[in-house]
Structure formats: C-alpha cells, structure tokens
Length: 451
Image (tube, rainbow, N blue to C red):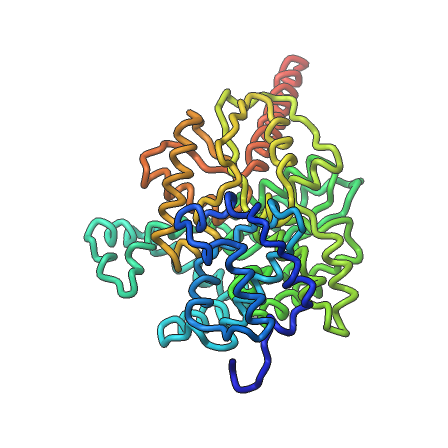
C-alpha cells in the first residue's frame, strides 16, 4: 500500500465488494476466461482479489494490476450476474487503485498517459487540432507512402502494428456540419428539445454519424442543439483509473449542456453513453454538482432508446436491398442494457434484411484502448467476431460505437471479409434523405407539368 494509507477498494461501499456469490454464472460470458480458463482471469477471480484487498488480506501488487488491465471491461459478467453485482464500480475503482499506487508505472507509459489522458483528451479543441494534422497526413499521400515503404514497422513500442487502426479523419467536424447546414433544419414547432454529445473520436472521425443523428432527430420532431462548450465525456479517463480528470470533464459537460432545460441529452456512442449516465455516481460527493449530476444522468439517452421511446417514424422510401447484421457494443448492451432498440431502428428502414449475428454481444476486442494495450487478445477476439460476420453473408455490419466500428473495419481487411461498417442511425438517415429527394423530384415534375 502507498504511504498515505488510502485504498480505493477499502473505501468503496463494502456491500458492493461482497455482493458476488461466487456462483460462476459469469464464467461462460467472460472472453478472457474463455480464452485462458484461468480463474484469476474471470470476473469471479478478479472480484475475489478485490475483496481480499478490501479486507486487508492481500496487498495490491503486479498480479492484481496485470489482471485489472487484462480485463476488457466489457461488462458481460454484469448482465449475466443473478446477484446484480455492480462490476462497473468495482472495475473502475480497482483500476484507479492500480494507478494510485503506480503498480504499472513506467517512463513511456507515464508519458503517454500524461499526454493523452492528462492533456489531449481534456480539451476537444486540442483533439481537433491533432485531427487536422492527421487529415493532412492521410490526404497528402504521406500515409500511403509510409505504408508502402514499411517504415511504420520501425516505430518504437510496437506503434507500427497499430497504424492500420488509425481512423480516417473527416473533411469537416461536427460543429462545422451543424452550423453550416443542420442547425437551420430544426423544426419550427418541435415536440422535443434535445442536445447532442458530439464525442471526441466521434467528432473528428465519425462526424457524419453525428450529422446523421441530428437529421434523424429532426425528422422525428426534435430541435437539436450542439453545445459549443462540451468536452470529451470522460469515459476514457474513468475506465483507465484517471478519476479526477473524469470528474473534471463531467463538470464541464454539465455546465455546457444545461440539461435542466432539455428533454434529453442524446448520445450515439455506446461507451460514452454508459459512462455519461453515471455522472451522478461520479460526482455524488461534490456539493456543487451532485444535484445537477443527478438531473444530467436522468436526461442522458442513447439515440436508439430515445427513438424507440418517442416512436420512430418509418421512412416512405426503400433503400436498395442489402443484408445487414448487427454487432452489439458492449457498453450499449451490458453497460446500458439496450439491445432491442437498435434492432427496432434497423427494422424501421425499408429495404434492409436484418440477419442475426452469432455471439452478437461478444466483445470485438476494441474495448476502449484494449487493442492498443493488449493487442494479442484483442486480435484473437476480432478474428472470432469476423468469422461470425462472414457466416451471416451480410454486406453491412451495423454497430453503435466508434471503437467497435474501427475494430471491425480493421477486421474486414485483416480477415478478408468484405463488409461496410455503419451506424444504425446512418441507415435510417439515408432513407430519410432518399424520401426527401424523391419528394423534391416529384414536386419539380408536378411544377413542370403545370407550366
């Protein structure tokens, strides 16, 4: 234990720590246990270590730290648990304790954490500046040259193997798309007033998904706001032991959105939504923000869930026939317990044939930054996922999380499975746009006949 004598697991509400009955119902759902058959690599084994540390029977050490970061944090165990164990709280506190004690500290790792969690992801403006540099790198031909030359493999710390996972940066980010075209499309008499969380990676590499989300909401009677002062949701920090920085970002977003005056705060990324719904727990001891955090958490809605609740409008135009399968984001399915709503959105789009994916809720191996920190296990899980995708015969994989989209797109190339990866709302938005184009075309034809 560190010199200050504190211990985040001992300070955690002990009822959470002791809730596990050690029944083993979680074992078949855990990807790392399935791959290794090691008890310590199971949720039950990890919780046993946490409890021993909380009881003072075990000191947190290298083995504990290794297992906490070998865990995907996919939360499949939480869904399977008959006792309702809050593995999210256990997992996040355990990783925070690992970081507090510096059990996996090292020069390179410390530098990367300070630069990413402690600087880059604390301000969206910084990430956008980096995005513009990456966009130049990708569109100037430098990326193609780097790949063909093989120089990427000379990068230190195995970074060359990660280069294919770099997402393509969009030509325009969410703010620009919204201010230029989308803001003026808000309905004059909206049924609902909502605000969209643009995200961080979502904002620079999947801005069109944000645009599609706004379009879909507007088509369903919503006035959509895009608060300019919003920041990263903080999930990357919360899941990697940087609790104070996660709280800092939560406060910034609460200030920016003013959820008290909204019908909903809309999130279209599974991981961001799962974390954002827990701002109330994150700020429970903050006298200035606890009450506002409770309001915030009550207002956060996943886009699919919100559309299902308000009654999503079916487009009047069919898209070209295509076979689609759906991969469930871990933090959408297990973190938010949302599974039927995305399928409802997909089934609303005429022309799509939805084919169920075997092990649809089995982790793809992305898991935040798991494909960076645990590449071997990550790729093993990805290969398993892509085998099931191949078996569906689908040409499109729909998924509601940017990390999953990047991972599966990489898997398409890695495993030779030709699929496009899209967000469910993008397919719905495409149908609405086709409907709008057809209506405009018919109006123009009618006007021409009158002349």
